[in-house]
Length: 275
Image: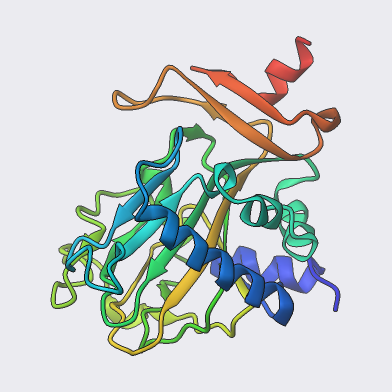
């Protein structure tokens, strides 16, 4: 199957998101599920290294399942998992991302979003660019389903076309199951569309699209590997809570560099050209 066709790009530009069936093979899904189990065990053994963050599910007893933490997400999975580091360069995914952003790509984020059975909390509506220090905010996020997702176990939902909206304030993202999807009164929730995925499929979405997810009320987990990509022309523009410099892995291009460190106002292109 060919990915990144003109029809794919047209659909993405009109709606702000695109589903890629079968981005990961059945064997790949099985391996990723085993790796998630390993990382759960590691989370119970102590503090992770460096920038990696194990975040507990905020609305559950963190030792409620088999004596180990109930995790909401793991940040910087590329630092603790060779499997999830390699998955960022999945060729089927990169074919589409490259068609949208260009052949040279950096990785802004590598995260496991975890919704344990019966515990996964609601994620309130938001726009990623409201929290991300890159300009212009032309980034693509890819969420690869490691387990099948639907409305019952808290799949992603989006408002099609909302990537054209101005950036707004959205409040808390992690919410209790019985909380409202948003506190804003100017958002028509009837526009929300569930994006159900088979295990191994993926959804790409624009960094400005309004999205969130419901709680997991099922006996099935909903685990996704999430990657956010940006082109080398984007500039690092740190806010008051951001570090003065950040190092980003290179996924493709830039003459094979492994990473680029950006300071305020710098782009990977400008740093690379000064080598």
